[in-house]
Length: 100
Image (cartoon, rainbow, N blue to C red; front, side, top):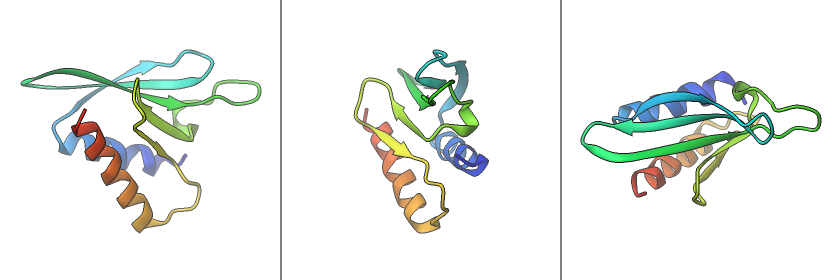
């Protein structure tokens, strides 16, 4: 993943009022976790960043996807930057989070 994936994902979540707390991964499958919360919303949501690799767990800035824990909501971080496709996928991911 490129840094712009993380930056744009963070900006999209913060624009919707989510506060993000970064948590460590599990040293196996998960690079790291973002804990999401916002005022006047009792929910706490967790986004896990996929980092399973052959010999090590990738750092969060090299993860290849992320998913809302305990759901089928996920987004893949493509290598090639296709602006239109990324914006559509990001909007769908954020919308799905909002509906949880």
